[in-house]
Image (cartoon, rainbow, N blue to C red):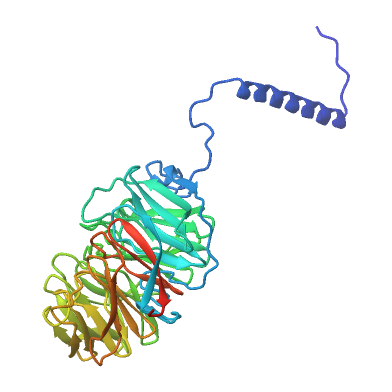
Length: 470
């Protein structure tokens, strides 16, 4: 029998307990530091770990987990001008703050790119382009200096893409502190536009059962205020996600199983509401910006092979549609009756009169300018009447165009850039020069201040376009 122990006070019990806890912690730390832990027991935070599955685990198959960030030698330029998204500041193909356009152009720099037709976005002296790194089999969102084209940083993630008439073909979107891109296989990435830091990513194929278009994704992300608007098709006709987090705000049901096309979403105001208008695989739809509800739709505009041009907001509820592959063009008029919105066809034009295989037409001063399927530049009025064409001796293939300072910049397939008057008075070319020396010069143009960015299949060039004639 052991002798009785003296009774401890409450304070002594607490002190003893603390000593035991400290001793146990020291022993555990020793074991932890001197044992072989299973691989992956402690993981460094990686891009994509914010994409959490229903089971509460990061999606280990996400390419964003393997994302790489590389810092380059370039620096942002102290230059004015902005072209922050597809079709410019207002999404209409017009440079609102263009410098005085001259007829003597000076090449400033060129940069090599992976095969594709992705256009540039420009802001704060930085050029953003979604490239494809064929050597490392990766999408690469690159930030270049507007001054000299040197790379400031790049963020890449592994995606296997085979050559199929180019690879990357979308333009990033810049809003606030963010840049958002949509890759050829429907990977959406949001980065800090200054630092390149990964913010969030979405795989539209895995998360929404999107079907990658035959010639890869051509849809450019629409950012409206604090939301990113996307049309994945498959499990959701359209979605809105928070710009800062990527979290879903609303989803539009897809009962008719519309697929993603190469066309981009366009905001249109009508009857006191903002509509997101999209040309899907089975027609055209207008979705409510507030909650994603379908406001109207029509199956009377379906292009058999590839839907590429985006809708054009022609004002007062008019929406101009154009396409290639014998689709031609048509003008819709939205009408509201007893609270229901119905799209009505005002006119339709055969492809021989007007259409657009690849580039979206531009509405400028109540006239529509575009390159027809036969390659001619054409101007029509809002009734569908042809005002002029460039003629059979001046064709532009599938080349891009924009309007700045009352002038039209139009590129042809071989890299010859033409400057013409943007006027219904007639086709009046002012000057033309070969500015690219490859082929398939199809990427959308970008103009920021006095600097025009253009590219062919494998190279981008930056031009000063404000020089005067010698």
